[in-house]
Length: 255
Image (cartoon, rainbow, N blue to C red; front, side):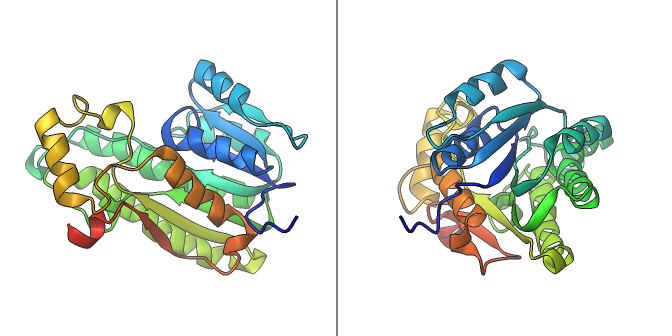
């Protein structure tokens, strides 16, 4: 059956796949027929994700344990991954909220290592070692915080995500000679245990944030971000490269 969104026959690497958007993306990729390689630091959670992946189209899935905030972790992943048709570069952290005057070198080093270094050096390793098949699709997970929704105390996070949006465009240019497309997705607040009342916001601020900033009246689901990523991995997006797609329930419109 005709389905330009199918990933059947493609091999897709998903980093940061042990939870949240990464986990949802790995599951969606498998449902659409991809052979999925998942990577993260936590072996127990990776095995749980691996066991959740669909195999109805005779796919072969595997996991690779790697800490992508380190050179050794990146080298290990690049060395084991083999050839891929898609990459979802999804590693990231949400640092503590500090006004700029309280930022330390240690804070900046930690955020940059995870939210930027890991993405840049993994892309370098994969293209240098020729792990990306011609015509592959590369998707970075960024954030609305790197585009428009800046708030007090989030400067380190926003800066790191803005850098990812810029790097995705640079990759689109550099990798175009091999017809490799590179894009970023920019989620707003996505519903996870951390973003529920009592997580990063108390009950009152949680409801206020939704009412004031989200046209759709709720936070997003990990699967909603994953389905946009799957679209960018598929042939349905074959003429899209060098862009960042907002997935924010309208938050950037009224922020």
